[in-house]
Image (cartoon, rainbow, N blue to C red):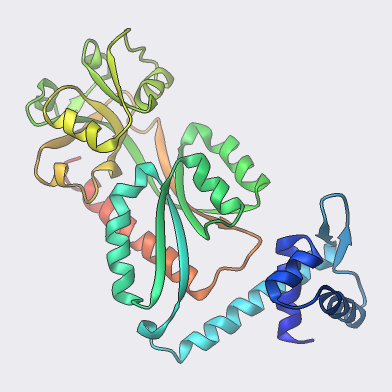
Length: 314
């Protein structure tokens, strides 16, 4: 059994096709077919079977693929031991949901390039659905998205159905964002009833939907819908209205750092409706050494920044 044979079965599983796997490995289809047959003959059982979708692993094949991915990852890690981190090269792609992009993208890029100057990291912003789709189709290696605790069951079924692994990073509370001269800024804790008659700056309709789920029904024409987060923050900073968002919305943001925007806890919702941030990636492909380093860097950065927010004003 050779290392390249393990790489071949992994790629065949990824592509679900011998011809496509052969193209990606830069070998001929007959060459790959013969290699797989030889490996199956040595093992004494079939690794793949064919159905309408394409090539699918057998029960034994699933176990072999799991071990093969672990072995390839460990071999890569062994190679990295003797390398200086600054000398590492490669390409990584990360897709961040809009709610997390402004809070973490810039700091993450700066920190990553300080440690790995020769690795190309591409971070893109996308909707929650697009982040999941990019990871599921392997357009992006890693994604960061999140959902409310009342969506857990449905979202986990979607993740499992798309063969996506998800690791929890932080849980967060929703709060009201107010400008420094808005009447609600005098309150340390806000109740939903305090929002009666208050203009709501609504990003993509998310705030109004969230309020309805929470039992508060905004009146007609109470909301101003905007489609840009910077417009949202500016309008709140000049006291044209309020918004509702998770507290990590404030991380690494100049409006909050300069005191132009502040958070106020929503008493009715504390401990009831939360949002959880997840790092997601495909289960079909083993994480590389650099993938794992990026995941750890995301966790450390997010948890550290979030802890400082939680222990701060709120």
